[in-house]
Amino acid sequence: MLNKSYLVTGGYGLIGSSLINSMDEKITILTRSDKHKDRITNKNVTSIKKSLHDLEKKDLERIDVIYHFASTVDNYNILSDPYIDVDTNINGTIRLLEICKDLPIKPLIIYPSTFFVYGNEYDRTKTPITEVSKTNPLALYPATKLCTESVITLYSKLYDIPSIITRLTNVYGEQEEYDNKKKGGLNYLIMQAVQGEEIHIYKGGNFIRDYINVDDVVRALRFLEEKNLHDTFLIGYGKPVLFRAIIDYVLKITGNKSKVIEIDPPRFHTIVGINNFEADTSKIQKLGWKAIIYYKEGINRIVKAYSTL
Image 1 (cartoon, rainbow, N blue to C red):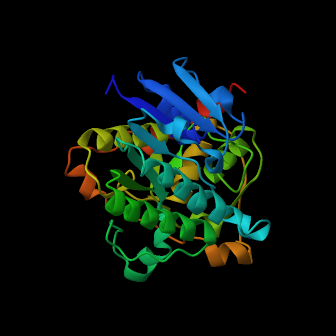
Image 2: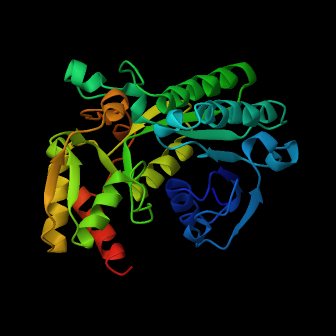
């Protein structure tokens, strides 16, 4: 891998920055702004400050692998700007693909989608979700992510652009924002516990999730890149955990007496939110990869990081 050249779109995000910091290869970051630039500790990088819509052929020439992280990140844009999910996720990706299709050597595109594309299929079937489970996105954000998957697959077939689609479960890590309830809700609650504040959680936390540490995600992405299998993979820890159990563990290790208050989710959340989710990650595990960071270890890292702020 050391002789490859990489482009990482959205490289200052949680996953993109974690990937970049783990790499030794030649990396170019595509970013619209300098927000979270401080997440990058790797000095062997260059950056291009522009949107996907302003991409040019020269930006992608001699690039071997594109990690395409540039995306919206939550369900709430429909309340303020209903076009931004389509414009960023779908139209921006088409611009990327339109350039790639005319390159003499097509770069491998690795695209992180989301488990939100399944909606509440787990609740309907009571069966762990796989790559072939029915998709039924409940909001505009996952609907555009699923559409983008299809667009990438279509361009791959039409123009021989190699691609790998990954559907990620709940990704968390110590570099995630702790003051944004729309994204990184777990980190927000952990910071509340660290500060000894009241913790408000929907349904008392009585729902299951599959939380995967960002370092495991990076390992999975690099693993699939090396395997070079042009397919779709569900990436998660592979074992569900009760959300209330996570909160109880946070309270235990912080030693604070934060009061946990059960609240009802707002109407918007009941429409677009996922109730329970359990992932069957046997497809990638059969190839030889498995997650190694249990949620307790990941929580310990976050609490340690937040306690020094």
